[in-house]
Length: 251
Image (cartoon, rainbow, N blue to C red; front, top):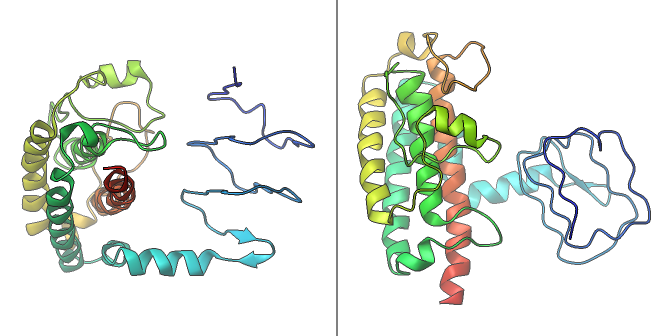
C-alpha cells in the first residue's frame, strides 16, 4: 500500500533522489520553493495558487494567468473588484455564470453529478462547499449570525471531522443536487442583499467574528471576506466546468 503522509513537516527541506514517484499526488500542501530537477515522465499536472511557476527555465506564470482569464472572464472582474460597484458587477457575472453551468450540468443526471472526477469534489460537493463559503465569510464573519452554518456545508479538505461537527456540519450527508441548490439559492440571495447595500465604509469595517471557530484569530475586514466569497465562486466554477467536460465525454 502506498504511503500517505498527512499534516506533517517531515519532508520540509528534504531531497528525494532516484526514487519511483509515478502517480505521486501532493494535495493541499505548502510548496513554496518546490524544485523538480532532471526528472522525466509524461502527463504531469499542476494545480493551485502559485506565485511563480518556471518550467524548463521558462517562466510560464503570465501565460497561465492570461489563458485562465481568457477561458474564465469572471476571474478578471473578481480580481479587480475593489469598489462597491465592482463587487456588484462581479457578483452579477457569477450569478449568470452558475445559472448557465447548472443548466448544462442537469443534462448529465443526478448520478453523474454525485461522482468525483480524479478524486476532486463532485458537482454536488462543490455546491456544498460554496454553501459553506458563503455561510462562513458572510453569514458568520460579516453578518454575525448566531447559527450561520447549513448542515450540508462542505468545508476545505484540511478541516477535521471534529471541527466540522463543532459547526454543525454533516459531512456524511448525501443531499441531491436540487436540495443543495435550494439552500444555495437562499445563501446567494443573502449575498445579493449584502452587495447591493455595500458602500466604502462597510467594505472597510472590521468584522467582530471569525468565519468559523477554527479559523485564525486575526483581523477580518468586510472587503476581504467579500473577496474570498467571490474568489471561491469563480475558482470552483472553473474546477466544476473542467470536471463536467470529463463527465460529458464519459456519457
